[in-house]
Image (cartoon, rainbow, N blue to C red; front, side, top):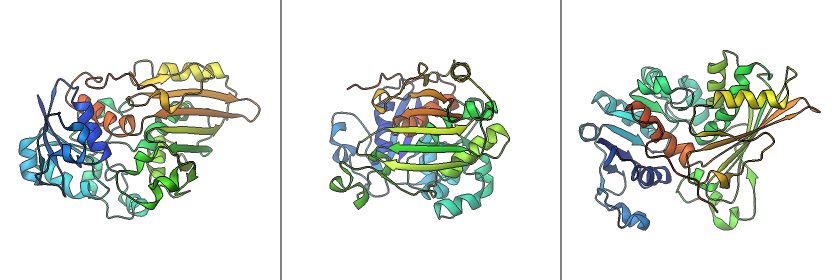
Length: 346
């Protein structure tokens, strides 16, 4: 059994890790950690876990944590993993970081976009970007995984095949994304207050969202060309889900069937990417509670643009589910272990 520790168990990603790992036959959730609730039962925070056997929340002590666990998930705010991960790794445990601390290879980019001190360069170099479908071989050999952000997961799975094809102008990408409010975390603020959010939709961090350089970095790495995106996120009054609608200007005359065939070929052996029928319009409801990313493709011959639709559950494929998928790859397990969940409907 793989001994798993979860730091940040009282947050949405942390409790989702617990839900998914409960169905994983190769894993024992050995320890849960919280900086603010040491000694407390997690069921006091999340009553839906009342009958589920879990260890009490423990204090954060890197050396003891490394001794007690084979892998630790860090479902923590930005900045925490920068401090904690090196000590865990130096004491022999693997780390899967769900924050943004190790995603950007250039520390100055992190400082600029996250407004925080970056991790030291050797650790940034050591981290493997955990986009499971595109980095499985690297992930299998890694000790430190930078789990992708929720928006980048949907955007990159949707865009990478076209970016590699050379059919699209690499500086023409427009990514319009809409997310449920759980992506903002469990903290209370006016921006997620029910009466402020309900029956409304709004854009935020226009031209300034920290996931922008992450998407550009991965697109550029996979293509060898500088890729630029115009990324605008929106908050919608629902709990879970992300819909990405992305646009790119075609530089080659390609047919809808060519684009469809490209995606079906790229993702033919990827269990959690479902390329929908040509002309489909996937909905977030159709991936709710699952680790799937559904993608649909449209070519607008009038405007010369290709349109990519991608939907995920931001808490599963955009966070905890992809983290477990990466853990499976790291430990040589079946990639789908613990994740074979049919989406919830309705």
